[in-house]
Image 1 (cartoon, rainbow, N blue to C red):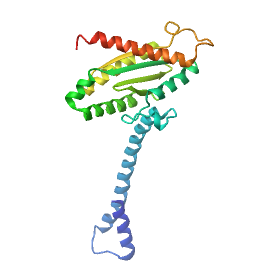
Image 2 (cartoon, rainbow, N blue to C red):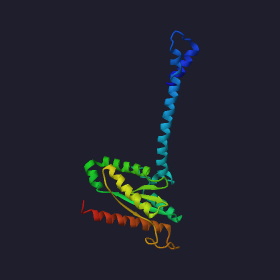
Image 3 (cartoon, one colour):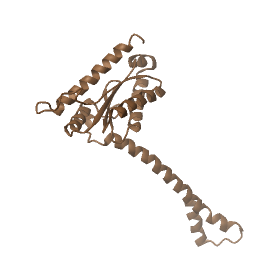
Amino acid sequence: SYCLGCYLDLLDEIFIVKTIPVYNWFEKMPTPVGLLVLTCGLWLWRDEQTVVNRQLQTREQFHREHQLTDGLTLLNDAKAFEHHLIKQLSQNQALGLIMLDIDNFHQYNQNQGVEEGDRLLSQLALWLSSTLRNQDLVCRYAGDRFIILLRGAIPPLVSVMAEQIQQGIGAFGCSVSVVWVLPSPKVLPLQTHKTSAKEEAATLLQLLNQKMSQQKESRSPAT
């Protein structure tokens, strides 16, 4: 419409049309209509780009190397997550960890196919990236298991987010087991010169895996 208006203006400079009464109206209308449509399109593109930037900010807020990236979900892998966790612990900042594991994922692959299983993992990764706060980090820990680092987290926040994530994933037609943990004196020994951030991170990850294994074992008879 805008190009048509410009073309009509160009023709008007060459030919003077007086035989068509509505020509002046027809000549002037396409340009503002085209500009209006273009403005609406740019505004909608801006809204879409804002959402995309938020997702990228959630994924890329930390420096990420290509070899530490999961090829399927485009999330950080377990090694990269451990690096970020150690960095967070070394700065003595409050944090929380949430681990989630898809229930009976091997049966889902058998029934739906491996491609559908990969698609499910990709959709969950995208959903988690867009659902979490900008300062949080989600990684693919192993197989169908994801782990989330919540910065500045307190116990009520971690428990609520874990429950919301577990309920939200139900919309994808699957269920997940969710466990969470907070570094505290009750869980970890007091940090001394002998206790490094790397040891704390290993203790937290080990505790999460133990909790997940216990929850899986307790739910296995029901399945």
